[in-house]
Length: 374
Image 1 (tube, rainbow, N blue to C red):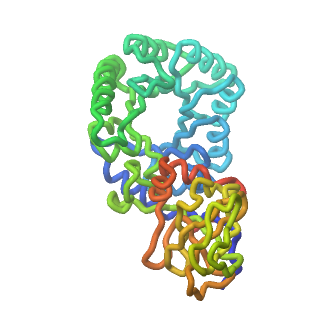
Image 2: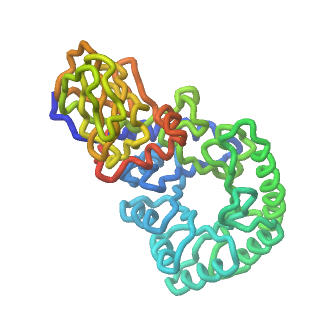
Image 3: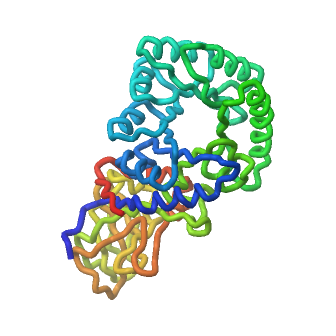
């Protein structure tokens, strides 16, 4: 057995590639796949490696939130179109443009800033006009103002009008009629603008919308969470033929005998109800294992689920191995992933924490090394 790692996130880039191929096969009407690799590839690390796998799987574009993320992709030699979706300061705008990123615009003043900065750099930035159909974040909500911005971008010789886009607020809620309202709102303006500008590209769908309704596919979809094998509806990703790409692993550093009444961790929030063996794992909330999993989580050891008992601390957590165990120090432990017939999904951890699977992977801290395989 190789020496165990204190904590490691093992990322299968082959799973990312296969997930993208599966998503690509879902698309209708010639729509293309844009893989969203922001936030260090949703916590999977080495965004260029994950992005490269996505491109190998059929993604023809990438999307990020920040200028630094766009720069990282370009520095790694990725040459597909990259869309910077977030707000940018003047300095960030320059970094994004120098990286050749396409820029989201949502107000006339920012369009002018993009045009002026691009002109100074000797380039013609491609811009994507954002329409707020109901998310309530970036973008104008009045379709007349959005239409005027599209026309302004089309008439501005220092930029190239690339696309009109929006983002859904409730695509991951199957019973939500608001998704249909947003789709109809976007479709109405999209048809009018396409009539004026035949080369205008349209994109709206996130992972949930892509899998929910092919009418949302338009010319391109922007898939993030599904690229990494996480289910956008917070259910079992296997039901949608998605493969989770990440496993979070540690090991049992110590095994201790507890008698009835002995306590583990800060605050003595758990006491052994009977004699048992306790395993100590050198991983904790400093690594992204949330403290709210105290007495509220499970870890796989020797192919079996073992309950987290006692307070999750910054660098350690404790698990109940049972009154009769042959587990010893050095035994591998899996906090997210599979061992034998058992598996713990990000979706399960998210349910325990009343959050979403995205936050679980994004919350794995920088001190946990990412090991990319596949």
